[in-house]
Length: 397
Image (tube, rainbow, N blue to C red):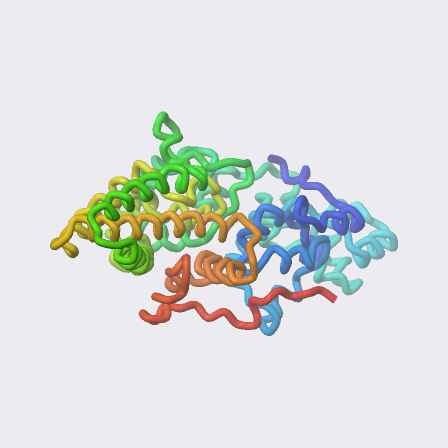
């Protein structure tokens, strides 16, 4: 796309985009559309909406109010939609003998120098912004973006093409892959980015409601079978709750020891592709609504060893083992639904804290914060993320 097509906006137009339907923010003269990021923000959407249509440069650099990682700036880098000619730029252009050097933004070198001389240097589009639209400098504004170079240097994987073949054929080193896959992307074209690109594609997508609709009847049936061989309902509840509690440990163990086995990941295409399929794709595109919960076909495969484990540990009574297993499966369904809600729903106060906690795992520190439904095992094993006052909602003046 020719870079000169990136539009210039009026300040009133930017200010009007301050709602959950369309939320823009600015830094200097750069305009960013962060609407798709609202529900993925490590705090709450209200923290962003408080600055909708406004400049966020100062608040993003204010560590006392709110800490921002490099991933936050990466989101902005990918969300640039245009430029706004703020007051100092317009004033300089009006007084200039050569306003065409300044407007439309970005200015050429002569215009940039004139802006510096008039004290408007902070409003000159940054080099990062220019690189985003394929420009190494303002003088390149009439050159086409080198799409291949941009993709290779900035995009890691092409979200418009099937991801799995790209990972398999990429030749990425483990270090490069892990660095890139843990830098979240926001997929803006709706739906899910293609994974297989063939008849297997539908099997990789699951709506959240499929989990309770499919699994709860089986849990109820299994619980009824377990009850039929027990002397009392109290015993059933006791073993069922035992399974539910054990699931929380399994949840933590799988998340930390299987999905985040980054340190021990083999440095080859098999290891990297397996990691991407199991969990890497979720960290790469955390807002994907249809790859947040586990497809029933995959969970059957993973649940089979736990079924056998339950009957091995509680070997003395088949009915006890079944009760424990059913409690664990119910815990899994709560985990999957909670995981979806943390990413995509507005929740009560307690769950908003969990939402902040989990999103910090994605956007700030993926090496800690493995609990999704609770922080209990993170506290036990020393991997708890610390949520400070910086992460509480902030209000603009």
